[in-house]
Picture 1 (cartoon, helix red, strand yellow):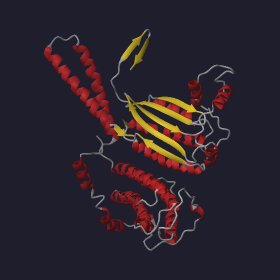
Picture 2: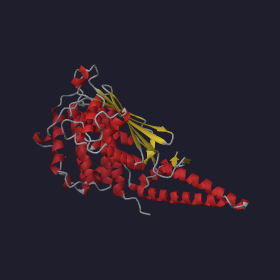
Picture 3: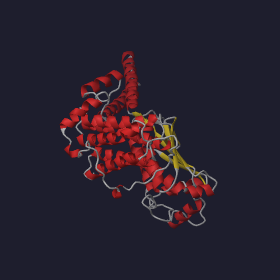
Picture 4: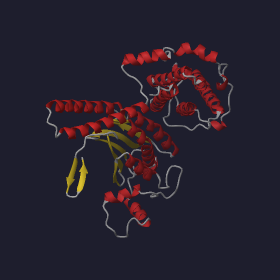
Amino acid sequence: MDGVDPAEEFKQEAGELLVQLEEALLNLEVSPDDADLVDSAFRALHSLKGAGMMFGWDTLAAFIHQVETTLVRVRNGVLLVTPQLVALALLVADHIRSLLERSEDVDPARGTILLAAIAELTTEQPPATPSTTVVNGLIPVNLKSMPIQPLNQHLIEADQMSKDWGTALLGDVQFLHPPATKVRDTAAASGTLRVPVKQLNHLMDQVAELVVIQERLSRVMEVETSPVLKSIAKDIERLAAGLRDTTMTLRMLPIGALFRRFRRVAHDLAYELGKKVELTLSGEATTLDKLLIEGLHDPLVHLIRNAIDHGIESPSERIAAGKPAVGRLLLGALHSGEQVVITIKDDGRGLDRVAIRAKAEQCGLLQSGQEVSTVELFRYILQPGFSTAVEVTNVSGRGVGMDVVRRAIDTLHGAIELESEQGQGTAIILKLPLTLAIIDSLLMRVGEGFHVR
């Protein structure tokens, strides 16, 4: 089997740290005086720098070091966290992600501009005082028009960072990231071990074949009279079932890591559209097959963007309708028997039955006057090219998003249900199997049809 690729191991760890960083920053926008959140953001940055240096990502480590240098006054409590600073820090996280991917499109000057912008903001910002007022909400920062200010003597071009500089800093981060051998010893001592997904999938395939062969053996043993052979077959059946359950558990992950990625999606889109949206997450501990979690990312992005763009009204519209100015969006998960149920629910304007019917008739999906239930009517929005949007924007209006969602959920052997009340909001419910691997089921024949349960 292939060994663990250090570069891939680092990228996986760095991705998790970036999620922690963004989560801390988004929380700081709401609670700018929370010192624990500031410490959490700095820990994520520091860990990213240490891991980057250890695995040879010198450009990444150099950039993060300069970010830490310019933000040290915030960590020490000398300066307040402001909306402008949070906005810049989120752009820093985006640049780190680009460096992590080693994309050819990364502009080397962008990191310098970001550093200069942070340096200017933290230099000009007045010291924190009890009378200072912080206004929540994101304020745009036009980096292109912002002049590049000379930074302190520690600012050097990332591409020119020497190995000596990295070695000198290594002692600063060893307490978080010891040498590779110590990392693995620590992992072993803590009872956890990272395993490449490729190897885990290979193991799962072999276990699936074993289960199928064991079932064949069970059928043969139905006509076998030897008590010894029957006993052996029973033992093999028990061991195969246990091995299958254990292996399936290895691929089960809490869905919270996926859910937390969407806080940034909701935050940025709400700001772009001039809306105020509060995203609430529930059921983050709900476990799901890793392959299903990976397959859910794109459809959930579409659904969250649709909810914020089409569902949730602007603050002025909500106030006029007697609603709070801040829209509410729920992303939740729970186990229900052999399924995982994921709900995306907003308190917006709801689905427009009249507009959906008119579009369905225009597309030839319905005849004028034809009777159709509410459930059937709502399902037309899942058809390719179906959109009731009057204008096409960079967010929606081409009738592609919901069709993509339907196809993705079909691929995952799941189902979509839609519930909506005019003026009260919309709920989209995804029902998915716990895993795409082998699970116990009952095949029933009713008349000429077969049903699986």
